[in-house]
Amino acid sequence: MNPTAQRPRPAAQAAEILWRIEKDAAFAAPLLARAVIAPPHGSARVSPSTALDHTLRAAGREGPGLEVTPAQVARFSACQDGLAASAASPSSESVSVDQGRARLTQLVYGTLRMQVALDALLAPHCRKKLSAMDGLCRNALRVSLYEIACMGAPAHAAVGACVAYLKVKRSRPLGGLANAVLRAVLRDPPTLNEHMALPRWIEDRLAGSLGKARARSLSYAPMPPKTGIACRDADAFDEMQRALRDDAEVNVSPFHPLILNVRRAGSLDRLAPIQRHEAWIQEEGSQLIAECLPLRRGASVLDACAGRGHKTLALLRRDTSLEISAADCYPEKLELLLQACARHFPTVSVETAAVDWTVGSGEFAHRLFDVVLVDAPCSGLGTAARRPELLHRLTPERLVVLQAGQQNLLTALASHVAPGGMLAYCVCSPLREEGAYVAEAFSARHPDFALSAPPMPAALVSALGALGPFMELGPWLDPANDGPDAYFLALWQRSSG
Image (cartoon, rainbow, N blue to C red):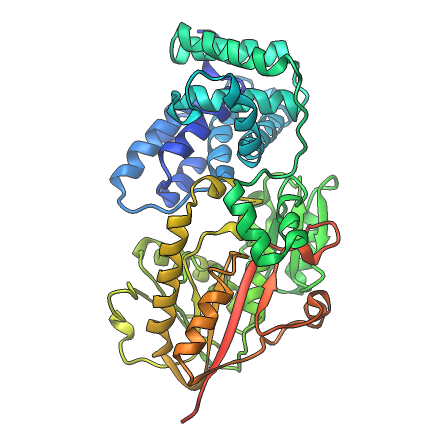
């Protein structure tokens, strides 16, 4: 069998991954994580397409899934391809696999980041709307154009490979269509920068929420996205710095001494501090939110929308004496949370319960807590540099639904704050519709809750400058637009009466 047919070039894999992201908004994330470690069917020679098909079918049987990022999907597909390459040629294992994975990830991320601009170039040369075109063909066109315009691939080679791929995967007519469209676009070779291209309505909302300068910083964040590492203590921090390979780009967070931000660091899971559970991967802004909550030793804390427990871990790093209860709609997420807590803080017990706060309080009925953290479901636009697919899923109608849900969550959870206790509301979105507007509406309806300034690290206070009633983190905190993801935090103290 032709080895090339077994291992399609990264552009073809990227087109298929992007098509799957369009079709299937959610996968079973725990299943995907297992599949990365152990290829399906117990074989290292499974092709990326077969592996993705297996994952999608299995995810459908697993019930409600968690959203999966392009990085996870790309890592999964590249891992399958890399394993096949290693099995076939063990001696050429390391460099070629890393290069293939890096190129595939760049193609997936880059095409999603530039999709609006790519579509604007392609649309005038298509007989019908791109949205009505065959999904695989549409994404193959985007990837090929991105590869040529942004990565410097030879046009004749990229076009030829795209046409040949579509003829095999779809039909000769679709291959011919791709050839005609790409050659028409390339008659006047386009120039594209690497700044994220936003849908117009999102660009307008961001400018209205942040001002044009801050809104621009979200699009201008350096690529590739940095990866945040949370170190449990100073010893783990020092060892992690020593363990990172010499050519990695490593920066210590200016806002916290136990946070590292890295790029081009290879597989972090192989590093000793992570294998020994003394460090874990967590975005910088997510860690900082936990650092800005008012906590006393032994305080009772409800992490009401805990997910897989990232903020629970960051809270425990601050103080293992905290009595933390964690809730989420999905029991499978809470199981992952418990596993993470057991790995990183084995002497600490965390209470969990599956609760849908829109229905009731479940096992937490009539319970009061010193601190209630509402990390509410949101658009996630603050993470768009790392999750650019969110730009193409969000709609104005969906934003209205999210805002209503956020307001309802705050109202439901306010009743669980003890007198004199604190209510914290955060979202990983810079939109005022999900931040300030929700917080202001809550304050107007609940006069017994007074806005309170978050206790922030001194370096963060200095970076934020003039402080308003809310805390807003984002890439703009760094002169090179390389700050944390965009987060909003509001804090209230309940009256003692």
